[in-house]
Length: 348
Image 1 (cartoon, rainbow, N blue to C red):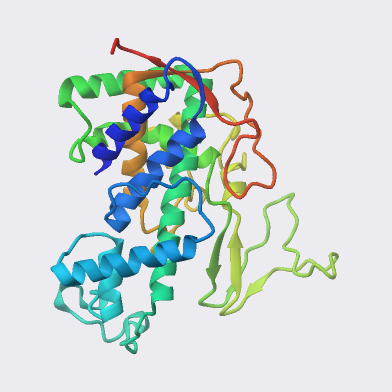
Image 2 (image 1 turned 180 degrees about the vertical axis):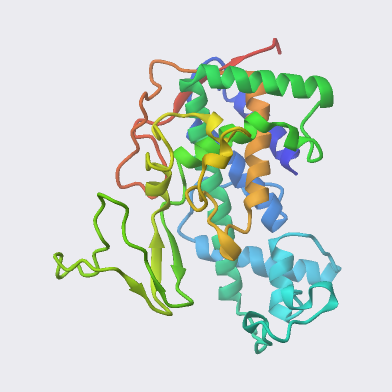
């Protein structure tokens, strides 16, 4: 599925003259992630939209209803999002309560819950959320990764050498051997740190907890915006909503020295132990982290692998350096676009 989409993406890019010309990669990356999530989540070979039309709600409802009816009629089963929703709507979805054939009797989280009939609106909203999360976050990460590789040719060259050695040994990228591309993993991890698509994580407090005193030289927690002088140690209660500022933590020099520098070596085997727990959270943490971590990582690695192995990403006169993000945008967008040039490494 990934490779079919990638080949279509490559052909489209070459046909539209994106080789040896200055090109804004934002549209290219969003086309790729758009079609990948369409195929993987909805069983569609190509979604074919780049912006949401006015009838977007009816569009996603149509995907849910028509696809479910077709599969029910023809007894079709696929390991995708639609299949999970079909099982959930009929109450046949397997969960942790029955893992290994054992039903937990003691854990409060696994107590039997009443059966729920899902409406078309609820199913459609799940489809929309899955699409939005899988489409935009991956596209933004790819855009910023390509931009950083253009600004850091030494990093790009080191990545190319790793990919070249990999291809000599294993050929094309496969799921069985993708773990051998360590530097590629470091590059994408550093992209996710510096350009995190997750700005804030919200969690509900399940147990009373008193936050520890601040570090030396820092201010205590401000508990009242109406009384800014009232600063106390914060006592969290059951049910309180806590916001975790992921972007701020990722760019905090206390946790990540020289945070503005794009340095994949932070995640090397020699250095990764220096990263403290809960100071790197591009996919969230704990039991409610991103459901599509492995999917997203595979999607990102496959495309960057293909681009770097075939093209040299070159900084041009229109490439922003340093990058300044567009204000008031709901996603990561360089203010003047992410414009680079793709130069073929081999004659086509």
